[in-house]
Length: 257
Image (cartoon, rainbow, N blue to C red; front, side, top):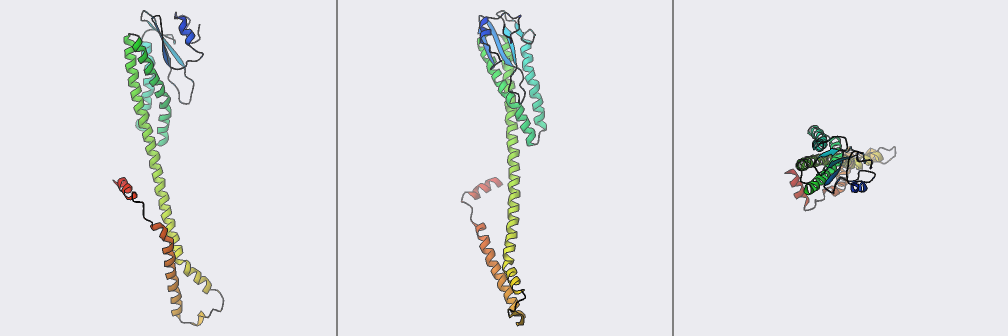
């Protein structure tokens, strides 16, 4: 007897031969009026292993679970476990407002969404092969779970991307402000550079002959240095006055709108 199949089950040998050592993918097996659903328990984030839960429907329509339960209600309870986990994720999404919180939601929802999607496909395949009201109800419930989880996953992903983009925009604005401040400081330094250089040279204890001249010479030197400073500022600031590409004003105007 296969280790995944309870010893009390009287199922076709074909099912045992088709089962591997591990659960494998979620699927349905059909043979001689028997139906065997190989489903996965609720996966955990970060755990690559999937725990199997089997449901067997005999030709008389009786259901049994590998966990020991009997009746079609066991299949409904299997789906209810997913539903409870999805409710927890949905509650977290209502209160989340940070990127790491949304990342935690996406990280938890991703394996769940994959499992629920395959679960829905398996139940749909079983429904197409077996006429059973329990399968119809389970298929419909799995479809609702997939839709809800898909929306939660998409919303959390978009919210996380928005927060990351907003943070990047804040950092870009901060960097631009720093660059502008640095530019102003550089222009200020460039403006006074000639005057500082002239003051340093004239202030040396050398006989340069300017000490005997009137103060008009002093103001003439100061004026010439300031004019030279303006020229240096104009040269330094010229690259910053380059025109934007033709499409840039339209893009910026679109952002303002």
